[in-house]
Structures are given as C-alpha cells and as structure tokens.
Length: 144
Image 1: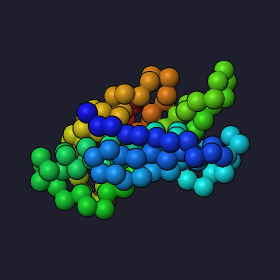
Image 2: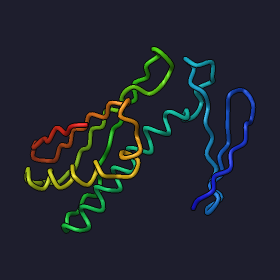
Image 3: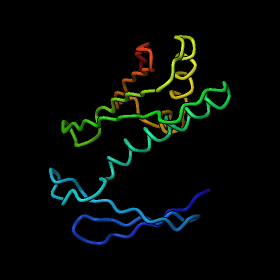
Image 4: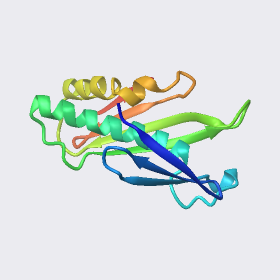
C-alpha cells in the first residue's frame, strides 16, 4: 500500500505528497475550468499515468526480450468532453521505439502495454486508441 497525502492550497491548486519518498507534486485546474493552468491538472495526471505506465511496460518487454529501448517516447493526447458531464473522453497514445522491431515484436510490445495496470483501470467510457511505431516505419495500430 502507498499513501499519498493531498492538501488544498487555494485558487484551485493542490499539493500531493508521496508517502514513501516525500516527493511533492502540484496540480492546478486548467484555464478552461477556472484555474491558472500553471501545472498539471488532475486529468493531465491521468494521461501522464497512462503514458508512464505504458512506457514502463515497454521496458519490461524489452528486458525480457533483450531489446535496448532507451529513447523510446510516448505522446498522450487528452481530449475532454462536456456532455453530459465534464470528463476525459479520449486518451490517444502514440509510442515511438527508436530501434528496428519486427511486426511480431511490435505485437509483443502491444500485448505488454495494453496490460499495464493504469490501462486496465481506465473506464470503457474513455477511448484509448494506440499506435506503436518503430525505427523502420513498421506500425501496429492497436485497438481499445
């Protein structure tokens, strides 16, 4: 179990403290929701959690298969919806791996990243399209 303690700082800003490391994280409401937008918003952290979890799972696949995937990057595009309530509607994920991999290898990577705990915890109401590309232009478009 990990404990995270949060404090409301005022002006739609929060401070979170990670119990085990004492690392602090600040969130701000986005400008389009009456905030200052000076830091990650809570929904930005959802997108960040998904991207970092998937990137970690690329690393797990690489460790198992002997690939050097340093420099791999993930871009997550968060799209909000407002009807019937304001929420995250879509998290489009693009993963770029800067080494040559076969389509079979890319399928292994896709299997790993789609089983990361954050992805598995996201509601079916959020669309999560996935594209994985590697150095030699092989692309494996994933499904939800």
